[in-house]
Every structure is written in structure tokens, then in C-alpha cells.
Image (cartoon, rainbow, N blue to C red; front, top):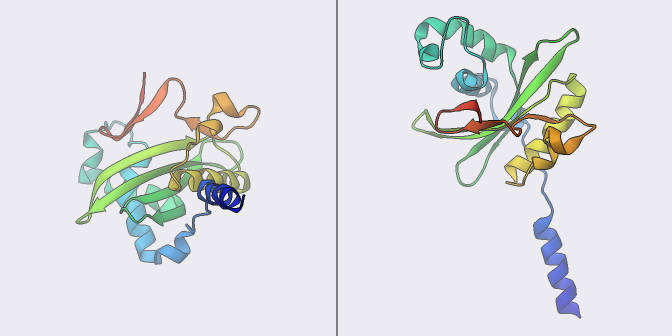
Length: 181
């Protein structure tokens, strides 16, 4: 009987999601935070007007992307034992009231270059307190490599959590961009 009880307790302990210590203030210096945002801004931010995915890397756009990186807020940052960096970054979304949208993803950096980048999900635009709460819940699941499908719009009604991916939209990690089916 004790063996079964210990087995059940072990399974419960393993299956429980651990809260990830991911506050960027405890992980990165202010300079490192800025450098990280500048390193990934061309992925999570829209391209400037009259620009496409190929020309977004042109140095002529550096000031645009620098401004966007400064406006973005790194909510969560966590480096796992396998070298992946999980992140949640928020940017201002168009709205009558101040609202933001968060992108939650993972990447790998080698020799100062992003060798892998994937956006796991992007939230709906929300007011900041709600966005921070929901982003933390989603981020912990992503960093623990748990499914977040229950937070997709089709599964979370009447709540709004994740806007993308959905039935028509997915993230292509090879192209490093959102695509439609």
C-alpha cells in the first residue's frame, strides 16, 4: 500500500507545473535586457512601411527597430538547461485605451547569433494588468513544455487569451513568421 501511495505522490509531483522564475530584472542587467530586445525586435515587430520580410534587415531601418525595441517590455525571460531561452515580450497595440499584446516564444543563441527562433503564441490585446496575469500563466506552461491549446480562442470562450495560433494561422519557425493555411 505504501508503494502505491509513494508512486501516486511521485506522479503528482512530476506532473505538477512548476512556476518558472522568469522576472527579467533578476535574470538580466538593464543593458542585457536592451540588447536582448534589440536582438529579437525584427522578429516580433511589424516591418516598416514599404518594407518586406527580406529588406527588414537593411541597416536603413535600424532607428525604426531601435525605437520599437525601446517601447517593448520584456515580461519574462528564462534560460533552460538545454540552452533555449524562453521569453514573453509585450508591445503597445492599437486601441482607444492603452492595451498591449504579448508574444511568447523560445530561441537559441550561438556565438551572438539567433540560430533558432519560434513564436509559440501571441495574445489578444488586453489592458496591462490582465495581460501580465495571463501572460505569466501561459509563459509558465510554455517554459515547462506544456500544451497551451486550452487557451486558444476556440477553446477558451468566453475568455480571450491567445489570438494566434488558431485554425488558420500558424508560426513557421523556418521562415520565422506567421503564416495562414
